[in-house]
Image 1 (tube, rainbow, N blue to C red):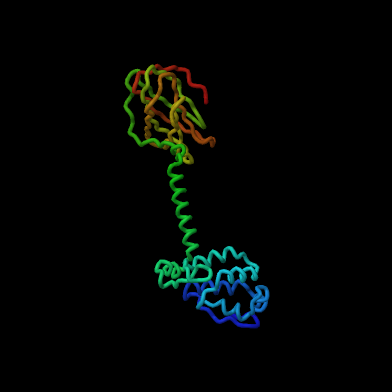
Image 2 (spheres, one colour):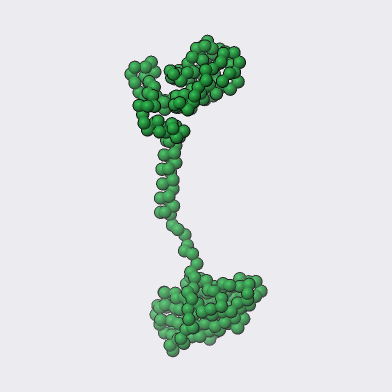
Length: 269
């Protein structure tokens, strides 16, 4: 790569991690000449050129001075330099370069185009992902999805005192059933078969004052069971999207315990 004045000897950056590191150092100076960089470092340009050579790794002091002369942060390059070296008592910096051939794991990383730093951050990212997954798994999942009624056949009439039939002649948005009371806790079941306009397919029924809202489907018998209805007064509520369309139909309520019906309808909730 020529930048005016003295020319750099070409480097095959794929021949090893040190070659890639030195080639990146060369690229760092951009269009600035070796003479200018050498002047900033206090080195002759031939010395700078000789030390930017993958056959012999540059010292850490040289890397710091060179990167600073190029106007970059030497800290990041020092980190990269240390990734290429291993402790040794035989060098002036206390570190010495070991060829990739001696280190199969490092060689594989280089062949994949991955530096140790990238592998480190990848490991941290993977660990963070595991932690995030654990946090998500241990975090409350929030409210359950709305219950959906089950298809059913036409129900038998409820036993005396344990339920009642009901009918809707026209409902455009929302209706409440009449109220019943029960002295003991028990389950409550509702069968419904409502005919809807073509543009309407679902409606909802909820047991009041307690009980989940359940999605029913138009045009056939549907069934749902609320397992725990406390002693006291109850009613159920039916509603649909308020789109001006009306639905009608019939149904049956059945309780597992005796109930007392009240003829007055519940006030709209």
